[in-house]
Length: 75
Image 1 (tube, one colour):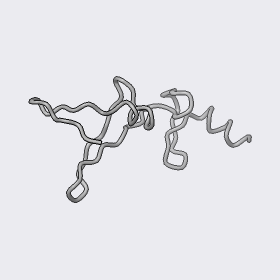
Image 2 (tube, one colour; image 1 turned 90 degrees about the vertical axis):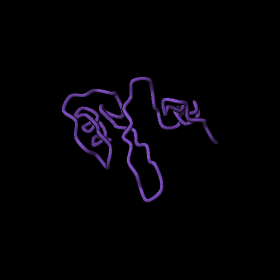
Image 3 (cartoon, helix red, strand yellow; image 1 turned 60 degrees about the vertical axis):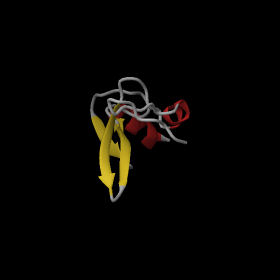
């Protein structure tokens, strides 16, 4: 899969990638370099389950709110 970079340095992420990684308009992507690669990483700003931004904690590398964490622990 390839995409052309325009005169302002922009490119479009294909819809199948946006769907796969749940990237929506307004989401933030971190950009960094690993050796000779440019790496994009979606910046999670809310709970991965309910999108809440209150009382977020790290749970196995993902941000989740206290309510969802409690629900998971109850299972």
